[in-house]
Each structure stands twice: as C-alpha cells, then as structure tokens.
Image (cartoon, rainbow, N blue to C red):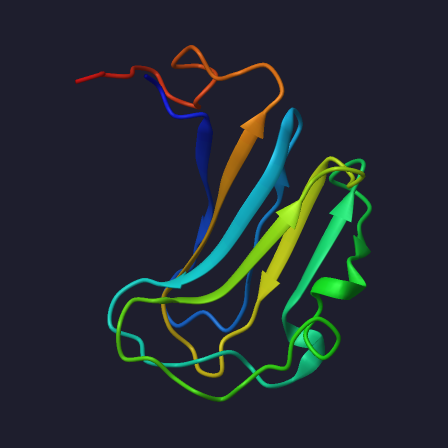
Length: 142
C-alpha cells in the first residue's frame, strides 16, 4: 500500500537567516500541513511581531493575498517561548477546499538561525501512483 501524501521541501535558509518564505503548489490535494522547522540546535521561538508570520494564497505565483485567519495576531498569538529541541516552531494545517492553488508561508524567528519550510500535501483527488506523482525519480517499496 502506498500512502496518499506528498512531502515537499519549500526552502532551507542559509546561515543566520532572519526570515524564510516559500511557495507550494497544492493542485489536486485536499489538505496541507505546512511546517517551519529549526535545522540544527537553534533554540528560538517565533518573532512576536504579528506581521512577520503569515500565510498567503494565490491563483498564480505572482500575486498573493493574506489568509487572515492564519495570520499572527488574528489566527494565533505569537509567543516568545522557545524549545531546545527540533520541534516545529510553527505549523499551519489548511483545508484546501475553496482555497487558491498556491500557498505561501512567511516565517520569521525571534533570532537568526537555520530554518526549513516544508509542506505535507494530503488527500489527493486522483491518487499518487508513480514516482513522478510523488516528486521523485524512483520509489522503493519494501
């Protein structure tokens, strides 16, 4: 049995990044989980400035509008709490029904560090049956 989800790496920050953004194409999927994860030993939380952590959507990659319910200060209150583990610093869980095709998260940590934005796309309309469907050159099933 092959799981019906796709994991997409949106971007990995360089040395001491202060902000990271990526665009994810969600065409054909019903649900997305977007994560901002610390890469390495950074022990910092979110920036507590509301406008710095947002989720946007667009029909193309050239024009986006903010999803108000997912924005810091509206959908959640940023905290200065930190975690010394590699736990995700921010997770958006998005029902894609009625949403635009592209999602663009912007993540701003409270301090610079190494970060990764990734998305897990789930509930595909047509199923993922090939390596290409899964964004891979090869799949090995065990």
